[in-house]
Image 1 (cartoon, rainbow, N blue to C red):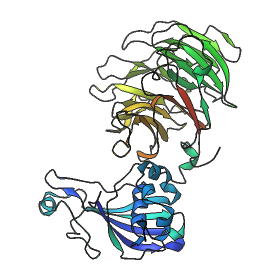
Image 2: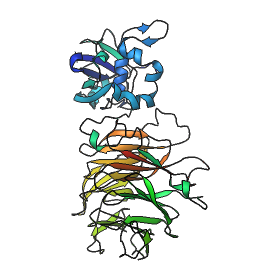
Image 3: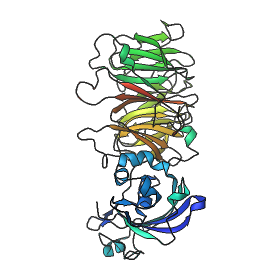
Length: 468
């Protein structure tokens, strides 16, 4: 791509403090449709590209940039967008936008803006009208900044990626998505036909000691999280669309039939005591999902919105929840580990519910092109969400459309961490007591593998960038 997307100017540079301030101007517009490329966010990939471009001249014969970054990163590296997504934080530790101007342009500004602007002698025509932002960037080594000087300016053909933007404060609370702690393959020891079978549900026990897994055909596995050994491998019987949950306060697992919207549940279930290693009889466990303390449960309602009712252990009093005020069917749901919040994911919108009041207290509209699965950490401050990939525009997937796992920081509703899989994400589970583990059920794509007993469970530990 040769058309400039941005203009970049150095406002201040301090290599000793590993700090530089950039002014970034949007120089690419479509004035006919009144649209433009957006200002960069706070992910580091596009700023790594800016730094790489900033070295003047080329190395002889190789057409590679001069300067320290040019010698470390080749043109192939910087144009490998998946590599940049994954590795930009090795060079840039933090990006923070400190000011924004002319975003969005007024009608009067659109009347005089042009479609393209190019750098001429360190400036751009109509600079006072252009969408622009100021950014403070922290790097990991002073040598990435040593070639810069205040006032230096250049045009850039880079465009925003969807890389990670977590901070040091986030690090202890979010998973190390670059490398699983363990990969579990539950169907490896299964006998009989696994055609049309896959992992359908996963739940950690309340104390985080066990991870229970249930397949679409009623197969059940339980793993001990101390060493990830398989402690249970059994079958819960034949259930139409099986649901699985733990009985509060212990290690008894229940599998039952998925209930229809607005209809009473059939009080039939299979219960298994993991500690005793035997089936048992326990009171019927109502609802499709319960809070960790057992005080709140949800069941699908017939209110015309495609959502859930909240109720207690005995099914009453029922609190009808209006999450949208219109038809917006919920696709995925999760309670925070401390039971303080219920998160409901529709196809595109995310709703945050206070389960005590039964009211929506926050929402993120157009949260994703499509939400499939979600899980919450213990206090609801971070969510793991399986969704359509945000990277389809710059990664090559062919006809496939795999899922991306994104970590949301709920304080500001920002995606701060993501991992692009080459699979579907069937289910997510985050250990509710200490938040130490995030389990992700990965379903292969393609004929002969999809829903044929090939699901793999990747288990991630907290602390991105660490080696475990």
